[in-house]
Length: 80
Image (cartoon, rainbow, N blue to C red; front, side):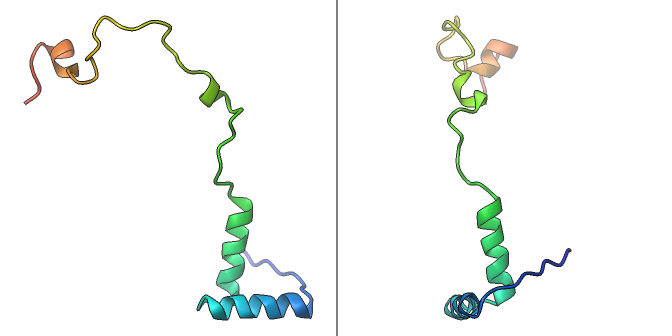
């Protein structure tokens, strides 16, 4: 683990203390949660190529039920 230090104003410290008290946690944990929320994006970039590259197949396959009967088409027997 690494130690991160910073300076905050009296007002910021009072707000942080009150927040921690209201959420029944420590200031240390409240700051860790704030860092995670700030640093870890939990959203999707709609311009990401993975979301605009599909559909990969241009036409439909021979078997419309291939995902349901994969064992039969691959091995010649029904799934038990």
